[in-house]
Image (cartoon, rainbow, N blue to C red; front, side, top):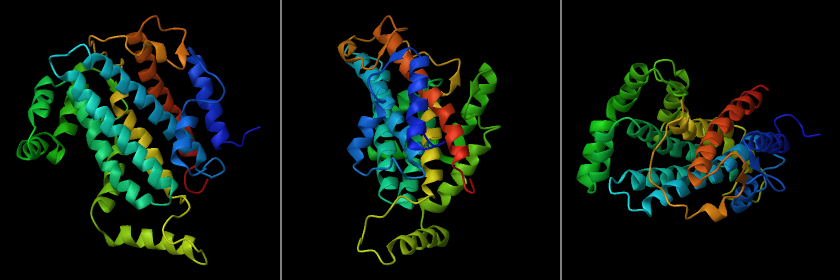
Length: 302
């Protein structure tokens, strides 16, 4: 029987949620193939369960990208599909780099990536309800326009305030609701210490380096520190933000079934490519709920 909150426990839990959602799996779960790409074996590490959840998130984001590609190929003239595809790709690359850095012992460096993940996620959320901002994002195709877009849309909590008001206006439920989202505020406070050089950040990094390198023949790569608990947990929360609305947002894009033959794992509830992609996005919400349980169970002092 798998130890509670272990890598094996996480895999079994993920599998159960896939099956409850109508997916038909072979041996293991899709995220295990992702894990093999990173090289370092974390299956026996204390935080292996969180790594398994991040690996599954990466797999699901890749399938979300297929959905937007299937809309791009039918020549979506609005540019919405390719904009969301690029945001998906950015989030996919960022959470993958966080996973890789954590597994190689570079937790502080991984935390600097969380800011990129956060800003991509909240922009995605805003674009679901603000076509004007999405259009400006698409047209910001020079360094000057991109900088102007950042200042007009992201600086001084502009997007957070927009989302707070929009959620209230529409009566939606959202896992990142700013007015009650102390979790986001806590994450941003910690990110402020690592986004720019600070004595707290460099002291933390040096302390971990000495602890792991004393008597070792390794000069660069280190074991994953237990402090990566925060980084991995935060990455799961942040990547879930665009998929954390109730009711689930419907994109209503015209798509091609170009990927229909590679729908693995298959889903018995989905009668079409669009329905299959909806079930994939719902799985991200399920994964986030599981991550809360594992994050709390693996927290400091547990």
